[in-house]
Image (tube, rainbow, N blue to C red):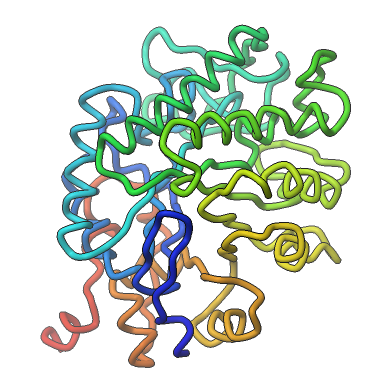
Length: 359
């Protein structure tokens, strides 16, 4: 596993090893979408990762979709996130913030007062969301963005990247999958526009590329990453040709100088997203989904990726790097506490060293 623990540089990001903590929504922010003290503990505990990609965070009030998810669009949020980044940096870690605009994947009960749910077209997602006040709720019928409003949303992403740097993050990652706003522009069932953001594929990927260009222009391309999962139908998006979409996106981003591409295994049979990304993207590649220590090491040794990200294993194993290095057993997480408020099932999983003391 030597390669897994070797340092590497992605753009302007220096990683101590090639083990990445994938972004995971855990719903521990306050009702005002401000990060909480328990989030400081959670991320600091996992600072030995080569890179932490912090959970999907909204670039604007309009971008909020779920309950208790954080934002990065006001001073209070920036100050609270700074406590997280300082705690991670104090332990020698590196951390970037994933920017996630939910678009039409939103329920009114979860959104801040005065905000809207927006999308490329006024087509509701066929999905239900949990709310703390009303239980399961239908998604909102979104407002269709005008051209001027699209420019404003791109500006929100740009400002969010600047806010993330002000909060001490080492960079940002654009969430480009899971049915959120960038994917809503790409999918033909959610994008029924007839202007330069709709219709042909080159128009439907335009929003994603313009967001990346805006963020790169604000904080430097070497601090910007992109996450994709070709063909992922989550949150009611339908991409009729995910391979063509992936290839078009790769062609669009390859000259931007991004820090990395973070790509998930495709759920589409026969679509090898990792191989296509390796061939079509000349920058650093992080792969995700279903890896353990041995399979991750083999992926790196084969030259098929530059780093591997872990999600599930990081829930119950804050010291995942140390456990993998020493060949220790991995703890299992409790599904019942994935999204519940408070430290239980979040920041109370012990390291192996602490387990040994308690045994």
